Amino acid sequence: MKPPELVCPAGTPSAMRTAVDAGADAVYCGFQNATNARNFPGLNFTLPELEKSVAGAHAGGTRVLLAVNTFPPAGKVDLWKQAVDAGARIGVDAFIVADIGVADYIARTHPGIRLHLSVQAAAASPEAIRYYCREFNVMRVVLPRILTVPEIKSMAAEIPCEIETFIFGNHGLMVEGRCALTNYVTGLSTNMDGVCSPAAQVEYIRDDTGNLSTRLGDFTIDCFSCAENAGYPTICKGRYLTPAHDGAYYAFEEPISLNLSSLLPDLMQAGVSALKIEGRQRSRAYVKSVVSAYRRAVDSIMAGQDPQLDDLLALTEGQKQTQGAFESKRWR
Amino acid sequence: MMTSRLTIAPILFHWDAETRWDFYNRIAQAPVDEVYIGEVICSKRAPFVEKHYDEMARILTGAGKAVVFSTLAEVMLKRERNMIAGFCALEEYELEINDSSALWHLEAKAHRVGSLMNVYNEDTMAYLAARGATHFCLPPELPAGAVAILADKARQLGVAVEVQVFGRVSLALSARCYHARAHGRIKDNCQFVCEQDPDGMPLNTLDNKNFLSINGIQTLSHNYLNLIDELGEMQRMGVTHFRLSPHTQDMVAVSKLFRTTLDGDISAAEAGEKLDAMSFPAPFSNGFWHGRPGHQLKRKGGLA
Image (cartoon, rainbow over all chains, first blue to last red; front, side, top):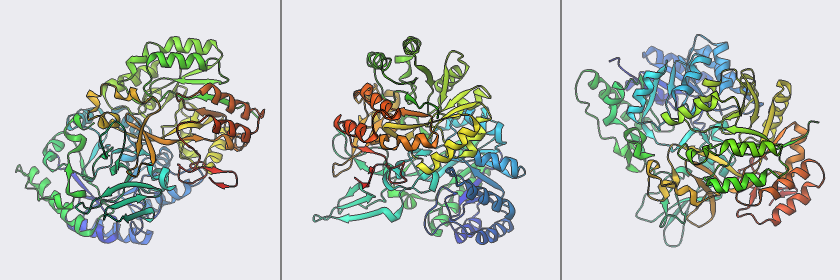
């Protein structure tokens, strides 16, 4: 079995150094603008920062994958082309893309640089993936978090490129690249602006009885009693009401994190080439703990030993974890 | 200027065969030019209506409508992959595709690209147009400025460009069925509870404000999109096709109001008042078009 690449989040230059030191085989990152799907305040890289960081990562033997994985709206495509050209100039090892126009630009302009298909492209079948391989010479697909391990295994046998899957972190419930909920509420688009539940439109409101409502834009996303920890108001993690259900419920999913540590050996045997840790928006301490733990686990499995995975529960959202769709079709 | 074409989108909800027959029989008499048929949301629903498509298409074609077959938006399971392969081999229908898996099969065969595909910019449009795409229905979250550029590009490329102008707006797709979840079930054992909500299942906030609408794996807006005020602007941009998404309310009346407005026979203001008077079960919105939150409504002279 070939060792899988451990792909780690780098939301800032210091997080990238931390991930490299903790044993990342590759890091992924983006510029400080709408060209990537984590366009959050205080995150991401200026061009000089990325140039310096790429040199540092390469010196540590770590590859750098540049996410240019949003969908440029008509009239603004140049910003995405500039991001790609800058990435090529400073020597990134691959581009992660979702938009067909952007993929075509890279394939024509920078054919020597690897192209990875972002999870934002929502390619969930062998035919969809083969299309991107045929048209743009995609070398790797990041699979949507909606397939079981057996489905990933049969997928691996049917496509001509490598597979990257998420193993830890935020567990979005909507198909990435196909969600406009944030735009409906806030006027900022996940696909076009790289924004999901923007902090500038979040409000926490405590009422007379001590209950805390979390709001995004004009809408209440959840309400917590004093005994509960209030979560961040992400639309697909909120509680709602519907006549068919008795009382408030998580209509889409609970605030919960993906943690596939116990499925790691199965994923590696299924033919997964790269294991991705989500969390460019998370702290350096988070990156250090999660990357170190998974580094040790992957190395143990490769050495034929049982992986001794540290308890990562404290780092998960709402201190709850799931194997999501990977474990069973019952998730759907 | 080319005549504006009025279209009926594929029925997004799980309407039974009888309801669909009734709907298409009425639409056959409505002033629409093109009708999209086919199950776009859930492959489990398809067997209920598949056997009726040919006859429905015959009736609509007989009434002078162009019929286009719309394909599944989410293709993952073997059954869904086989459905797409089958549809892409069809010769008797023009196809509208909603997932990139169809692009693998079609190669250069002529096809339309649906609004659930991500065509956000002129480069993507040109790439697909060079490989058989003849018609693009744009994502509903695109603001006017982007649509104008795409309409211009479409004119240069000689392809059609369509924009949804009425009905609940698709906001998200998932692999999980939220209808089944609300009823304490899973997708494989859903017992087709989505049939109970022919315009979508209401999802309200905890302070009981209307918010979203659930249709199986799809999440839609609670509000109904209504771009009657913007039709003239869209026509001037070069939008060629105007899409009405089916609901259980009187879609023939809706189509007449949009048709007469497109033709300049009545003013958008007059048509808008008549739509307001029809008492739809949700307020109207047009925020996406104006680059605002999608749920908002911008009336002439300011936000409502």
